[in-house]
Length: 302
Image 1 (cartoon, rainbow, N blue to C red):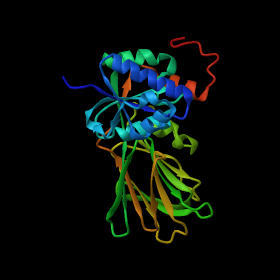
Image 2: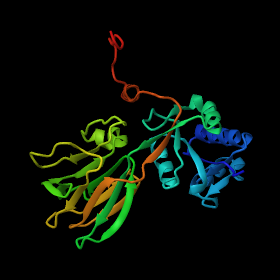
Image 3: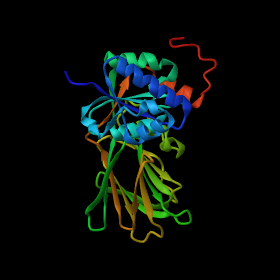
Image 4: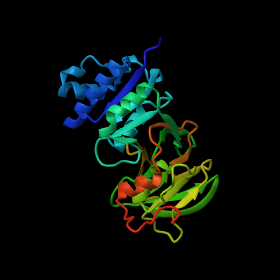
């Protein structure tokens, strides 16, 4: 019988997260599964508590494609890191929120023991989220960088003093050119992150779409756009731009963009898989996260 490898991803700089990680690892072992830690997390956790020293390490005897699932102890940033670690493996990610209420975390820390029990019993559903594929091309049209994103890809000015000049293309046709601080191309999952802060629309996870939002654009027509999930967005750094740019993907991976660079963003053929234990309405997540006032609601059907 194959060993059940469960990745445990923890932001180990907090005492409560270290204790939670130890609890999850002990529970997995008691159930006959093998807990696995990312190498960086293992080093941090061992420094905090020597009992982590004998836990298997990802990439050192256990590969990503051997993982059954990833349990994440932390907020949305830690979940994004876990999604990067399991990218391509097919393993779903289960987020246990250890801080502020996040949109990606499935449950709160008080339900952690029940979550581990249900993971062992394979009592969960898998939800697939649209991800982005990003390519950067140079002036000669050669691909010089490729990556992906779950939340968003942003093209931003590299210097605070100088804006960038861009031309926007949708499905092979030019739409508009203008000076701006940058552009955000977001998935529905990322619509409550940078996209939201930039004035973009909140998109329900069940809607397959891509949002395109300019940042401080000097143009009359520079409104947020919502395009189809199979459309391609290209952002070209114009040759005459006075500043250089930088591409950021999920705030984790970056690439410098000189004048003439072209960033092409489209739907990835490989979605991100999230493990779900409870069918929670996205509306309720919005109300909790933003503490929206709902006083006076009389109930559905009232």
